[in-house]
Length: 214
Ligand SMILES: [Fe+2]
Image 1 (tube, helix red, strand yellow):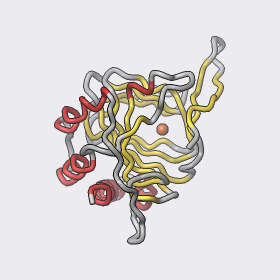
Image 2 (cartoon, rainbow, N blue to C red):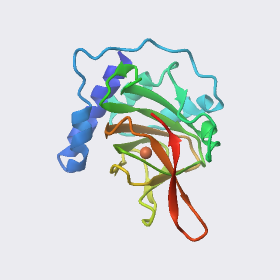
Image 3 (cartoon, rainbow, N blue to C red):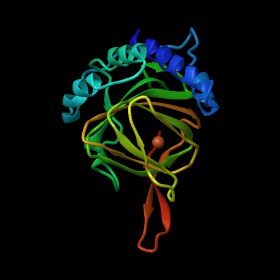
């Protein structure tokens, strides 16, 4: 099954790198499926303009050939959804970000302790500053983007094969380049805690407002 193969390939890739970077170990360990993991049935294709950029983004993928093949298989039609549906202060997010979740509380494979899957992001898009209780890794599969972890640090450029770990409750923001981006992600820890937008006023003071309940 594509979701299980994706999880195995992603786990293998992170495990190999965890030898040199132990910040990857929690994600590699979280990506272990039990034989009894139940599966959801497939949903219909998503009618969304960003889906037209998926094939192009898949063709630009670089890195571990087994992971590339597993992601391409996993990304096939069906079960994509909008992460944000157009409410609240960052309503434009609805146009720019889609997801397909291999494993999670409502994923293709059901597990309440993890979320892992694929994001498709539009080119020249900003994912504004936000945080969540879960510990997160973003792994760049295709395209180029900048990521900022923390309100005071400088953004870091990331290309295919590179990754970024965001600790629990650390605000982070993303900016995509001129091509659509495929990010692979894992959440572990507090995976049902909400996502919060961080908003800065004229005096530079940050406040949090609810982005999405999970
Ligand atoms: Fe995040």
